[in-house]
Amino acid sequence: LALDTKTPSYQGSKQSRQLELADYVFTGFFTVEALMKIGAWGFVLAPNSYLRSGWNILDFVIVVTGYISLGGMANVTGLRGIRALRPLRTITRIKEMKNLVGSIIACLPMLLDVIILMAFYFVIFGIMTVQLFGGVLRNRCGAPVFDGATTDAETGIVQGISYVVPDEWKGDVCKFPRSKDVTWLNVSDSDSGEWSLEVSGIMQTEWAFQCPGPSEEYPHGLFCTHFGNPGAEGYGRDDVGYNSYDNILLAWICLFQCVTLQDWSFLMYHTQDAVHWWTWPLHFSLYLMGGVLIVNLILAIIYVNYQKQQNEKLEKMEREMSSVDGPKKKTAFSRIKSHHSKASMAGSKKSSKRLGGSRKASKSFGSAMRMSSVGSRKPSLDSMKA
Image (cartoon, rainbow, N blue to C red; front, side):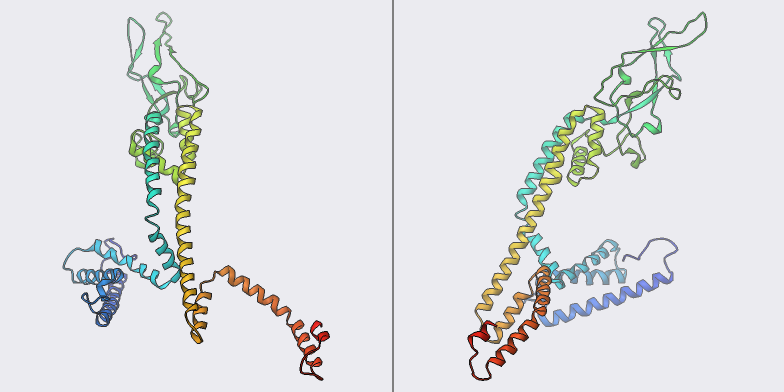
């Protein structure tokens, strides 16, 4: 399935024929396995029959969809993807992985409270960020363009001015000076023929990003104008972007970035440029509550539930060992030992090395015991001390 492709030159190629043959072979193996299980356990009526297991239901669906796709009776390209779930059967073969997956499934009821907490997190902070930052991340520094502009004869105000955002300024959010607050006046001298403009209504602040003033490249300077959002370039449009708080859905995407710690600091920098420096406490709260508290709560619940299941298994094996005698007791004891961690195994290896180093002392002790027992069956007090 992974090597399959829909390119025109692929159909009828050598690789295509080989994969088709492999499809027949794997379908045959799955069919034989299903038939053997059905013959041994029964199909569905017996208590422990074939279709009473969820994994066997998955296998049966895979076999049926395999024959439907091979027979060409229907377009089941999507159903063939179900075969990709078959490697999940390895979970039942790898004991530790089975325990881990079982722990995750068992702790789902315990995770309900964390899910409710996360829902409150997204709803409350989503509404808050929409009210604070809605629409502010759309402003960029643009250069005024006077092509097609007209001048009012009575007031001298220039109208019809457009602003073009240069490519190097499309990623920088701004706040001042806003183009909608600026008034351009035509102060040209009709006698000398010189044409010039004056601008008024410029507001500035030192706590947000300001567009630069006049320069050689931009004689009239740059002005903060409505443009688009950060990340809009990935969509091929300048007016659409996912880094935005214009509505609750886009705000949730930004909050998800804070939970996953994916470029959350850049969101903070954008809001600082567009609003004020005081936005950092809010974003640090989003980071601590979402990316640290909620995520670690989920991991802690999974870990505690996993340890609980492991302890229950060990206690069950200890009860089994205490209830048997003779040779069976050794078997139960070996089952408990098999559940020790790798760290304890490593520690036992180290202790065995230390014991190996003390064999010489034990041999000398044994020789002393034999020498002292030459004249008597019981060793003397001096030999015991030795």
